[in-house]
Amino acid sequence: MEQNDKIELTGGGLKCDTPGCGWTDPSIKMEDYYKHVNDVCPKCGANVLTQEDFHNFLTLLSIVAKVNSMSDEEIGKLTEGKVKDPNQRVIATIETHKQLRITDIRKADE
Ligand SMILES: [Zn+2]
Image 1 (cartoon, protein in one colour):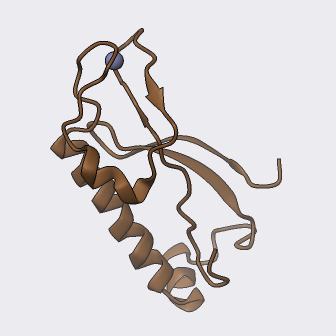
Image 2 (cartoon, rainbow, N blue to C red):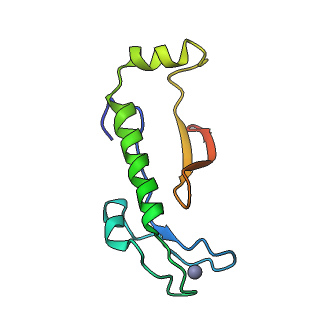
């Protein structure tokens, strides 16, 4: 992790979103996602990484890069001092299937 990164993107892996399927391959790295666009689930045959999902992932990367390029002052202006503890690190789980959405958020030390 870069010392000054506001957002550290971790994780990876692919999973099938078909209800009840449960197929997952945690060994696939984020940097290799582009190789897996339109891959078919070996269990149920569904598309596990659509062009749209991959586009959402790229959007997420650009958001991370944008925030990491901002200074503390710039971020401070956006939050107008409303964040109680700006140094509190949080871990967010972000889904990229169909749309970008945060499915879980918690303090990093809990
Ligand atoms: Zn499946």
